[in-house]
Amino acid sequence: MEAYMKNNFSFFGIKTTPRREILKELWKTHKEEIKQNAKAIAWELFSKKEREFHYCAIEILIKELKKSYVKEDILLIEKMIVTHSWWDSVDTIAKFLLGNYLVQFPDETENVVTKFSNSDNMWLNRSAILFQLDYKVQTDAKLLFSICEKFKGSKEFFIQKAIGWALRDYSRFNPKGVTEFVAKTDLKPLSKREALRNL
Image (cartoon, rainbow, N blue to C red):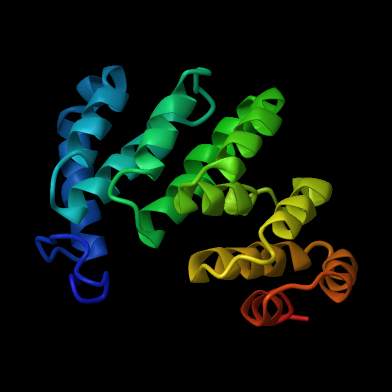
């Protein structure tokens, strides 16, 4: 597991299914405590060394914060994106935490996307590209295309890949729009190949 993550993190070596079973049992036992202190518990877990703790922290927040975010939660979301950053944590946080937060607070979208996309932190940039992955037909195409346009010249693998992934996902709901955007935009080969893979 450590090798798969390029030795960026320590692992206990607990695979996903048994890890979730352990968390489920603990959740049952401490249900009220977790509900009342979800953010503090999640950050405590996320601050630990082993990667399995980070996964548990994210899963706790996805469940406990759904449809009950407060505006200040963007600070925690941003902190988690830039802490112990790698694609496995960042992509889940972007899709399920940042994405759901901005569904609840759509008026914050412009501010958050502007801040994240202008950041020097590549993982915040990637999150700005990917946060609409779960939006399906509700995707703001204009926003998606503009953020992909902004980063089209990036030499960073994780940004090129994110552009392709976001466009490929949206192509399920708007193949014509994605095809036209790719045709008129000078994307990097990786982004273009990923975007058009299902078309």
